[in-house]
Amino acid sequence: MQFSVLLSLYYKEDPVFFNRCFESLWSNQSIKPFEIILVLDGPIGKDLKHCVIEWSVKIGPTLKIISLEENIGLGKALNEGLKHCSNEWVFRMDTDDICTPDRFEKQVEFINNNQNVVLFGGQVLEFDNEPKDSQVLKEVPTANKEIRKFALKRCPFNHMTVAYKKSVINEVGGYQHHLFMEDYNLWLRVIGSGYTVANLPDIVLYARVGNGMHARRKGLEYIKSEKQLLNLKKQLKLQNPIYANMLFLIRSAFRLLPSTLLGKIYNTFLRKKVKK
Image (cartoon, rainbow, N blue to C red; front, side):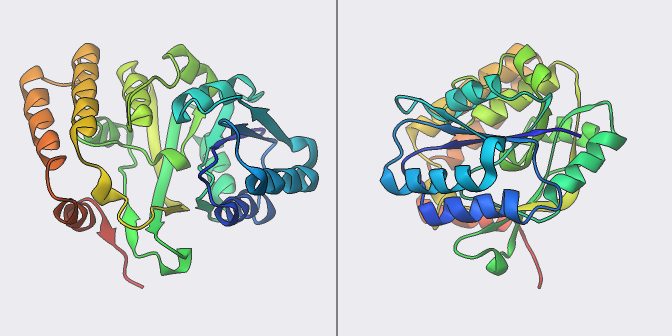
C-alpha cells in the first residue's frame, strides 16, 4: 500500500532531533514510505538546511521539500503539505519524535484490515532526553465508540501518530486556526461528520515533550482556545450545552493553576507511568 508521510519543519528545531526523526522514519523502518512531504515553514537556518540537503541526497525523489517564504504556523503548513501528498493515506509525524521500527508496518496492516476507518493513531511514550528513559505513556482509547466519548473531554488522538484519508480531511475543511488545538479541532470535525475512527493499542512512537512542556500550557491564551473549543462542540452538536459549559469552566480553571501544580496534574492524572 502506498502512503505519504507529512511533516512540518521550522527554524527552532534541533538538527540532532531532526536527524534522529528521519533515521526512525526512513533508515530504521520495516516498511518505507512511498513519499515524504517535508514543509519548511519559513527560513530554517543553515544547520537545519544542511540536514535537509543530506537527507534529500540519501532518500532521493521520495523526499519532496515544500519551502514557504515565511513561518505560517503548523496548521497552515500542514494544509499546504497536504496539497502535495499524492496518496490517499497520509501519515503524520513531528520532526523531533522517533517512530518505533514497525510503526508503518502496523498501521498499513490495520488499514488493510479495517476499510471503514478513515482516521486512526496509536499510543505514545513521552520522554525528555532519551527514548530509552521513557516512563510516561500518553494513552488514548482504541474503539470508535470510546473515542467519540473521550473526545468530548480530551483530545482523543496523539497527533504525531495519526494516519488519515486525505479526501476526508479536505472534506471537513482541513486544519483550521485554533491556537494550540488545531489537531483537536480537526478530529472533532471528523467525528462530528459521523466517520469511523480508531487507535491502535500499540506504542508506535516516542514523543519528545521537553522539560516542563505540560506545565506551560496555561494562561489567558489557552483559555481563549478553550472557549473556541467550546463553541465548536456546540456548533457540531456533539455535547449537551450545559455539560459543555461546565467542562469549559473546569478546563479553564486548570489553565490558571501555577506551573508546578499543573505539571503534577498532567503527570499524575493524565499520563500513566510505565513499569520497566
